[in-house]
Each structure stands twice: as structure tokens, then as C-alpha cells.
Length: 337
Length: 297
Image (cartoon, rainbow over all chains, first blue to last red; front, side, top):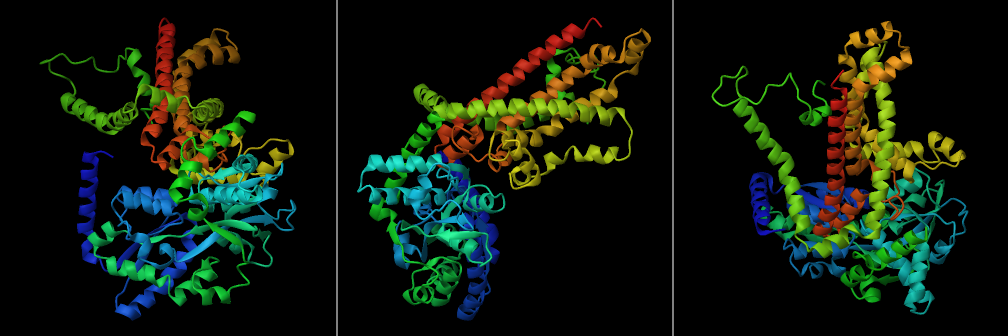
């Protein structure tokens, strides 16, 4: 983005901000990730009376959902979101680099500003006809995998990190073997969907593929009904996915919504907020809430991206950048076909 | 529908119904030439040339080696092949089906004709993502239509036929809407003359009618082809997006944007733009050649 477009964008932002000050106290826009619809709809319903009781203020929360990378991009280009609730730290970092969020965002709220977490898990069809028990079953020839495109969605990137972390453990840190393992799984992918919800639709409505790899929250929800045509398979180890939240300082500051934005994100950490989170199949941070729902969330060896791969940025560079590992492996798979 | 897309090929043929460029000072029959020309030039520049120039400038902001690296990447080349092949198939389908639809609409009066006429334009009105989702829903093996083809070993959704289907769906109206007015306007005298001079119906169709319709078919087909090259919304929902197999160029451009690699995206976009431009020029030249060949008639 060059200087002049920046100026135009800022002028547009300012104009929007002026236009909105009249009702600045009444609405909040939450830009969220693709499959965050249900949980944030439930949070919003609970937050409105909570905030009314606490401050006497009437507030309306608007939601916007898309892949979190696309959301970050939209906000950089002027989407007036007061808070972001993403499924990837990288995308918040983009907004920090763009000057819209202060660099200390991840210390402003507990647990690295991630009020809940999930892992990546596997959804199979009822009866588990392909006998899928863990990640290594996905390398078997003939297993058709549906997942999100790691190039277009955080959901897909987590899937790749889950495979790779598992492989590193399995092969005692042998990267060449882990690369092969990852390649065998990627070769079994029949659909790289653009976003999490699209992947779910392809697997359920379109009945394509033997396994769907996505967030445990999505997997558990789809398998929750006893008559569900699907079963959840929780792997022995998986990547811990954080759901970072942040106030978009630049926007909230201009719109005068900083207090509501902070209150909204703090609500996620309250016992009632954590309960809604657990009911929506995300793993809560609060120990009491977690204990109450222990049957729902089997223990799993969950590793953090930072701990296993250095940092989100170095994982991005190693796996997902243009011509990084995933592109190279996909290239080898393409050449083999 | 008087000015269908065939107008873009107007340049090569002298058109007696158009006014010759008015020499200065001479009184014109129609007023406002300067104003209308100025306005249309301004809007053409603003709406078409400005974004395209920005794109070319972005793509040119890199070194030649780097640009070549972007556009000659094997994965990118696989997407060009796929996009061009599918667009070609989609265009062939649209030409055959579109011609018959136009013929029926222009030549016959039947109950429901006006409804059919209106339905033709629906693909333009429908958001392309909705089109892609609906087509995928119909053509997966679990659905009746997809199931029928799956029994015969043909995979449509999440395979190449799905891409062709999405492309033909979104560009279908172009051929119909270009060909239909030409068929409606054809002078019956040539046809009657041919028949009365003893030509059979086949000869009349292929030697007398088809040459008159051909330019419109080419024009509509070209626009449909070029439109298919850039289609994104409908395709990503039905293609499966597997690199080297069902990944179209528009998706790779989208991926580059997701990587914040705007120059890479612009470089790939310039290739698609180049294909579109070359197609338009080649068709324009063919069109001129066809008109010259027809001229003695």
C-alpha cells in the first residue's frame, strides 16, 4: 500500500468514524472467524443483558464472519470492527503491523488473550468404516480427507501442524520422515475447502470424503446427537488452537467504544461466559468449568504452536509461505500424478 | 437487447448506419457528439482503464526475473492449463446449447416462451457462490444427478467436469443474448430466395443462415470464454481446489492475496488478462476476415 492510498483509506476511516459517532455507544462490530457464528451468537445474547445490568447501557453486537485472514485484510482495508475474535494469532499480528492494534494486545487479557482453546480432531462417518483411530490412519492409501486449504484458512494450517507435530513425536524428531508422513496425508486430501464451514458442508451435506479434519468444537458438535450419522475421533496428540481476542484500538478509539469492547472481551472470561464456551464445545480456560464438562473433552496431549514450532511466525515461514514445505510437498504430489 | 456484446467487434467493418466521423464545424444531424464522446471516454477510462493500469503497474513493480518466476511456477502453469481447457469446453457447450436456445426463442412462438426468455438471464442475477453451491449439491455422488453419473464412473463435483459446469452456467446468457437478436433480424428474403432457387433446408441453413449468424456466435462465444477465465465464486465451491488438479488461476491469485503477496497476485492476474486480450484480438481479426469474405454477397 503506497502513501496516497493510505491517506485516502485514513480519510475514509475518519469520515466513517464521524458518521458513526452519533450512535457510538450503541453498537459494536465483532469481526470473527468462519465457524465462530454459533458461539458468538450465544455470547452476544448473554452479553447484552449482562452489560445492561452492569452499566445501564443498551448495546447491540453486530457480527461479521469470514476466514480470519480475510477479516484481517478487510479491517486493514477499512472494515470498522471494534473487536476481533480470531482463530489465529497471525491475523491479529497483521493488524498490529498495520498499526490498528497495540503490540501489547496479548497481555491485556489472561491466557495470552485467548479465552478458550480447541484442538484439531477428526470426524468420521458412523461406524467408522475406514477404522480411523489416530493421525497415522490418515496416511493409508484410499482414505479420502476433507480439510480447509492451508493457504486460505487458519483451520487448514492447524490441521497441517497437528499432522506434523504428531509425526515428529512418532519418528523421534526425524524431519525427513515427518515430511513424508505429511506428504502422504496431503496426497489423500480430496477437497481443500476455502473455509471451515465450507469444509463441513462438503463432508456432511455433500457426503464427500471419509474424514473431516477440523476444530474439535466443530467435530463434537456434529457428533453430539446420539443419532448423528457421524462419530468424533479425538487423536492421541493434537495442536492447541488459540482463539485470540483483541480490541481494535484504532477503530474503537475513533468510535468511542473502547469500554464496551473491553467489557465484551472480559465477559468471555467470566464463569457465565466460560459456561457458554464449554456448551459450544470449546475447551474453557476456567478450571471449574472444565471440571464440570470433563466428559465432553477427553484428555489429549495438546501442544502449542509456539512450544513446538518456535512461534506462529516461524511456523508460517516453515510451512505455509509461498514455496515453503506445504507448497513443495503439494508440488511433489502434483508431479507424481 | 439491441446492443449485444457483438458491438465490440464493430471496429473492423464499415457500418453504414453509423455516422461518419463528423468533420469539424459541419452541422451534425444528431446533437451532443462532443458531450457523449467525452462522457463515454471518461467512464471507459475510469471504470476500465484505471483499475487495469493499476494492475499492470503493480505487476511491473517487480524485476523481470521475479515476474517470470511468478508466472512460470509449475503450479501456476497447471492452473492456466486447467482454466483455459475448462473455459474452452464451457464455451463449446454454451455455443451449442446457447445457439439452440436463441434459435427457439427467436423463431418460434410457444406457450412459456417469455418465461424461458426471462430464465435465460438468471445466471447473471444469481450470486456466483450460490450457483457453485447449488451445482455442487446437485452433482455430488450422494445427489440423484451426481449419483447417476457416478454409476457410470463420471465424477462431476470436486473434479474437472464440475469446473466446466460452473463456467458454462455463469456465462450461458452471453451466447444466447448475442445470437438471439441476429436471428430475429435476419431478412427472410435470403432464406426464401435460397429455398425457391431449389436449395434444400440443410443447404439453406448451412450456406445461407449460418454465415449470417456465425459472427454473433463467435462474439458471444468469445465473451463467454473470457468471462469463464476470470470466474472464481462459483468454481471454488465445486472444484475441490486441489493444487495441480482442480486449482484454477483465479484461486491461486486469491491465495497470493491471502499471503499478502500483491505483486504475485498481480503477475498472475496479468497472465489471465493477457489470455483474455489475445482472445479478443484474435476473434476481432477473424471477425473482420469473415465480414470481408461475406462482403460480395
